[in-house]
Length: 218
Image 1 (cartoon, rainbow, N blue to C red):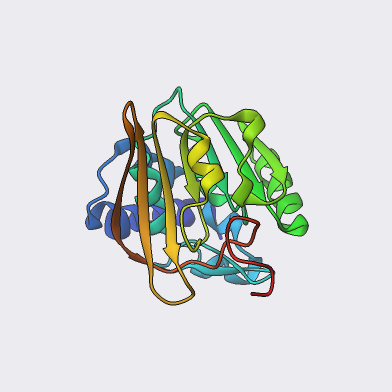
Image 2: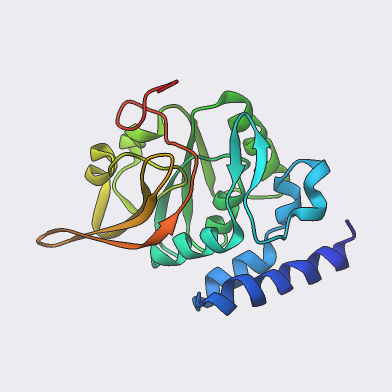
């Protein structure tokens, strides 16, 4: 895919799939227009990289639909000074989008091949503010908490308690909640007086596997 053509496809994707559906945060739109999504999918799928759909990336995992990446990112209300935790590195695309917007991205992946490939890919593309961890994403990254934002790119049966505990005051958490069928994109904000929770509509993600989520093979 030539640089000019893929740039045009990115801008068309942002205009029709993201801005056209109501995502208005200029920093989020700029990040989606910048990150080369075709480099985060298998070579055989480069031609479909800017389609309005999730795509397989191996090991039973997917790269999320561009609109869902934008929606979840914007829902965190990210700011340049923020530190954001991502659960489910996958191919690294969501981490790259976040890295254009916030100061530090901490990303956790449980599958070693995906984690290793994503780290190499992000480093090769020049992302120096993304920090990687191999492990159970439902446990979060307590040593680096609290976080201004937490984004979970897999569905949990409920919001994992460790992630709630790692959310800073004023911070937001976005996580799909539900089983393999109906899931709801759930937002949680920690205020001075407690936690506020609401939903932003239906979605469909692969399951979050971990101690505070779905069991392996369950």
